[in-house]
Image (cartoon, rainbow, N blue to C red; front, side, top):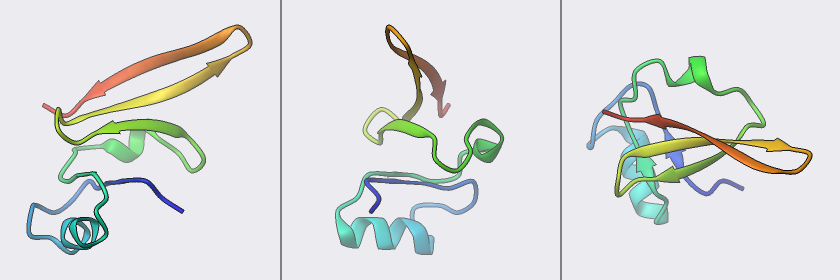
Length: 71
């Protein structure tokens, strides 16, 4: 199950963006080098309205968020 989509390639008419729209998923497309920052199993917070992706880093005493902005 996925809750959103982020791609390195493509634009608003790319296959990924169209599929995300059809399923009502938030998406950000064309994020340069996004696969350098994330790996399989990472938890992220995606805000497609603002165009931000935040990696959620779980620690023993709480949650720390590392922001990666799509600018």
